[in-house]
Each structure stands twice: as structure tokens, then as C-alpha cells.
Length: 539
Image (tube, rainbow, N blue to C red; front, side, top):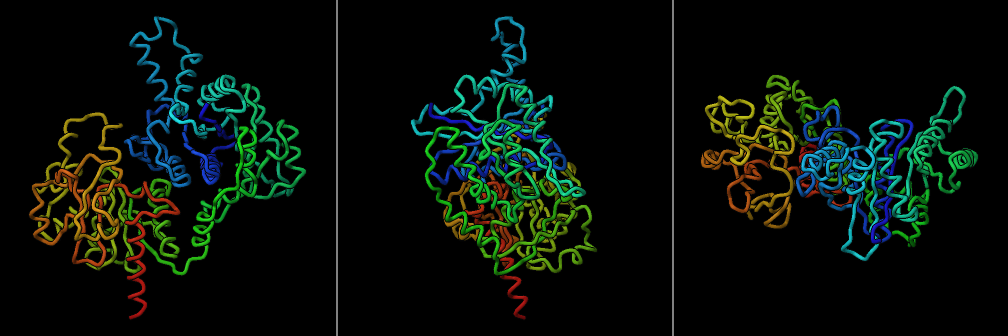
């Protein structure tokens, strides 16, 4: 069998970092020459997170093939540097939807449809397969939620069945659990972990490795106790302490021999890893030569995970420039023409990210205008680009009521309108222009200079676009349409040649940035912010 499987579950509480543990293992195995892919199985009933509130669930991560997925897939891609697919994120909603469609077609021959075997078979069918390669490929599969949740039970039962079918040496389980510290007594407590493992054992699943999240190091006695009560070898009880930089996690888990233990359980060789570039990146991250402040102007600022890929991409850009990036979070609902200067006068860059709906729109437009008029580096993403067009049309061309018809259907100057193939669509989930699309850059543009090539590919998530009826008005007033779709129909990127650094894209480039391979738009943006800072300091 060309695929080995590592299942990752969580116990005691949510938010322990199962995704980071899984992604760290992926990085460590890839550093040893193995092919690695990752999947996330989520127990919620939504088909995907595409219609979920970002404040509740965090950002929607989009894959190359156009799937709206959980933000954990962003962590996976950034850690293992592989592009994942629509098959990489499976929800309870997708599973039941598929089974019910089969029942409606009569695929089950009139039999009663049940959780076992129909739901569990559907889950098992979605575990990664690769029959086209003879090389060993390792699929790391994270199960969302915690052990004991009602919603997670079908997934755990599917794992039990699958492990029995393929053999224990081909499918192992890592259980991530909490070791709480009681300050009053100065003790680490193992009982919650014991209880969590007992729940798993009651379902017929025996963890092979226990990863303990703790604020304090585990001593030998604690590890021995967990090993005894949870029926695993002591060397399979590993600690996962907090790290200064998120991307240090693989290096921390390497010290705990996570990959070594996993390979042993899977009956695989465990060569020495090549982690030099990763260590060099962490060293650059922890020892910056400069510091710069940029503003992120959005409406979901109360939950930073709503913009997590943007935040990480900014940090990656900083590392490329040997700089620490401080993000000033600006709630766009609070920004007005009267206070915009007070909020933004000392930042060296302004970024307006994507989003939907009319809340906070005027504040974003005010921030864009401030960046344009005061020559502050500006980067607009998706809605950020559309609003840059709106701002330019209003305050440079003179179309006072210019707007997007998404936000003002009655505007007399709809500089942003619905894409023709999106007109009339009623369902909001999974119907946007999604996934990777090509873009041809103007060879005289700053974008071309940054990317270093004429044709690029970026991921998209939008329903509206620049109205081509306004191209002449925009360009005649000094806006450069620096990137277009190959057929020339869709404006993908814009910039202002009269401005030191003013770029915006209809895409979401943040989704393709990697800590050891920063996206050129973000490294360029931070470089421009540092240049402004240096110029001001030298005055």
C-alpha cells in the first residue's frame, strides 16, 4: 500500500493546537524525504465554512481547485509547502449530503441508511488514496473537535474500522491532550488526559503517541504515569510547550523525536532531516534588524484569526526584509474622514483586506484615500482593490456617488459590478469565483517587477469585478491596469505609477505565502514601508 496514515485527535479541551502538531509532523517527515499530504475532517454540519461568520470561525482558506476550507489548511500549506485540494477538508455536512444523494438515487437498493455502515463507509472513502505511486506517501489526517463530542463519534468509529482493515502498522493515532497546571498546589495533573484516552479506548482505539500540551515541562515521573495509565511506551509520551514563534513548533517537536516515534510506529525508516532552511528562517525571524508598523484596516479586527493568512503573509514579508512587522489593528467602522489622520499618521504601510457586506466600507475608503494622498505604501486585497477603484473614481475622477453595486445598487457610477457569469445566482455557498486563475502582467508595471514573470496564478474568492465601461476613465486619470485575465476581460491588478507604492489585486495572494518563501507582494509591501520609514528618519 503506497499510503501510510497518521490520525490526529484532540482531548480535554479544544484549541490545543492539533493542527499545528499535525502540520509540524508534516514538515518533519517532508524534511526526511517523504511525500506528505494533509486532511482535516470537521464535525460541523455546514457543507464548508464558506457561509460561516469569520468572527465565529476565522478566515475561509481557498485551495487552488476552488474549495472553501477550514483555516487549518492554511497552516498545513504554510508548514509543508504543498498545495492542498478540495479533498483535503471534509465536513459532516459533505458526508451526509453525499450519502443522502446516493439514497435518493437508489444506490442502497432500498435498504435502511444508517450511521454504520453508510456514514462510516463514506468517511473512509474520503481518506486520502494514491494508487498511482509506488513511493511511500504519508497522509496526516486531523479530526476536528474533541474526543467525547457527539459530533466526532462517526469519524472515530471510521478510524477504528479503517485501522482494522489496513493494519495497525499502516494507520497510527496521535492524541493531543492538555496537562493542566494547578498554580495553588504547583502540580501538573494527568487525570484529564487519562480520562480522554479512556474515552478513545472505549471506542476501540488505542493511541500510539500522546502529545501533551502544557505550560510547564513534563518530568520523567509525569511521563511514566501517563504511559502507565494510557498504555503507551514512555518514549511515546511527548511534550508540546508554547514557542515564541509559531513556526518553531516543528523544531521543538523534533527535539521530542515526534517524527522518529511516528516512523517507528509506521515501520518506516527515519533518516536525518534537512531542516537547515527552516532553522535559518527561524533565526532571521527571531533576530530582526528593523521594526516597522503597518495598519490592517478591516471589520473583523476583534478576531485576528479572521485575517490569519494576511497576518502570516505580512510576517513572512518582514522576515524576507529582516524586519519585525507590528500590525496596528484598525476597526474600519471607527474610521472617518475626521479621524483618519490621527489613526494612520505614523504607520508606514496600509493594507485593506477582503470581505463582504457594507459594514465599515466608508472607513476603508477613507483609509485608502489617506494612503493615496499621503504617499503611504498601500496593498489592497480583493474587496480592498474594489474599494481602491471606488475611492479613485470618487476623489480623482470626480464621480461622487461611484460605488460597487454590491454595496449601493442604485449608484449612477457602478465602477464595480457583478461578474456576468455570477448574475442571477441565488445560493451564496460555493458559488463565488473560486480557486486559482491566471493573470497576465503589464511588463512596465511594479507588479511585473515584483513577480519577475509575465503570467502568474493566484487564488480568488469574489463575485464582483471592475466594470470595464470605466476602463478609459480610470486610465486617463493615471490608474494603471497592471494585471488582466489572459483574455483581457477581467482586471486583476491595479497600481498608481505616480505613487511610491500603491498596488491592489482582485486575488488573495496571502493564501500562497510561506514562511520560508514569502509572497512577492507582501515582501515588496514591507520593503516599501521600511523605505518610507528610513526616508522619514533621515530628514
